[in-house]
Length: 274
Image 1 (cartoon, rainbow, N blue to C red):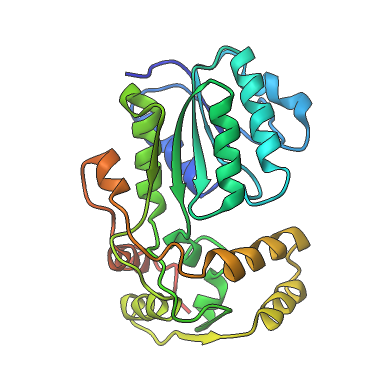
Image 2: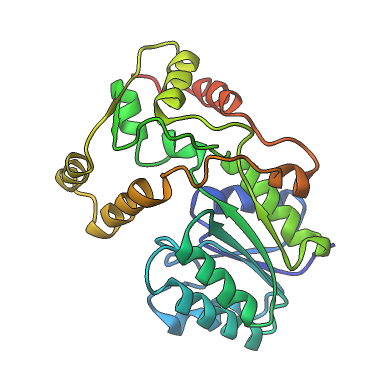
């Protein structure tokens, strides 16, 4: 059982915060590593890496902005080298399902020789409640460049549980888990389930990619995020990830959370009230 200090690179994200709560609940010492943490970590300032990692035994790594970006694999390889030099024994990497760039980063991490656990995931359920879509959901209409392609949305709580298992049980080292929900839904179907759970009408409208990206620009989103969303909708959401996997059950010994359960749970918090 893991008891030494664990570094969370990306500890302020959707998965990181959940992992911190779970590890703290077990009495495990954790060290969030971000630009604003006590020991700052910045992917674009490599002088911060060693100070953030020294003294830890393992790390959870969620790359920002996304492993799909061109420089991600080289950065992950460089981070792994520093981790080995600092004495870390194990890295859990949050990877992208169906993303070629993510697979290059996985290969770079494994080539470093450090023990690894790869957690592959794609679209989070929480994109509808904690991410870029929540304001449109509250306004009653979500407009995206996605049609009838199914996506087995994964609950971020399942990812957090899987990460904690990987960080605390050596039996998960040097393994790869593909994490999905138990069924695939199209974006219109997902919005329909959210509307039913919220008890109010919420419409879905498919728009062109050009209209989508121009709307993001008008809303003030940075160009890097716009480019990333364009790639995710234009390439990754092409049906390659529509199939479900047993990864959650394999690592946790229980079924993955269904989208309807996520929707009911989230609606009860009032997040989607108009």
